[in-house]
Length: 215
View 1: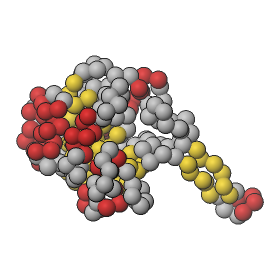
View 2: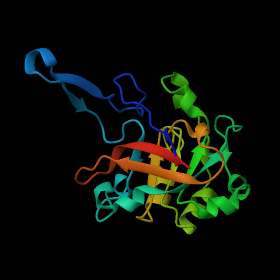
View 3: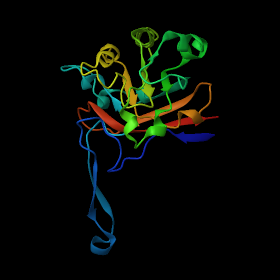
């Protein structure tokens, strides 16, 4: 068995969504003073490699992450290679059709743009490729558990209406994972994907530790 970490490290100098404050990691206790070390973490719920719940964009009775059963966060995943796409390009259904037999079996589709190589650079916020409405509808119709990407958002960064978020999260049974990394290391076949969010009450989103488990 081989385990691959798909998670960026949280730090005070990491990229955050425009308008969001970066996390703070403050020393709360020290070995010298207290005999142990402890850190006070202050950060937004959508920091780093994280998961969006339906309640992120919908009020009322829409699902929070803590309300999902744990099995929502584990399943078969497939990486969709989009490395040849340029800034602002769309991820169309032809990407799915090239691997449709495997895609139909997957619980999660993970789109690889190679944007994790820009982590910590200003270009991370550039016009990354994003999915078409048809791809979003395919994931809804095929009852995926969620979608993952190695960019900072499912929607283009200019879209303040978050149209794609609303489309997939409106099913109230879907999650979005943003800021993944190392998708180049898992190969072209299905693999076991675990994306476990921090469990806190009424969570609209949460940082996750995402891993790939390969046989």
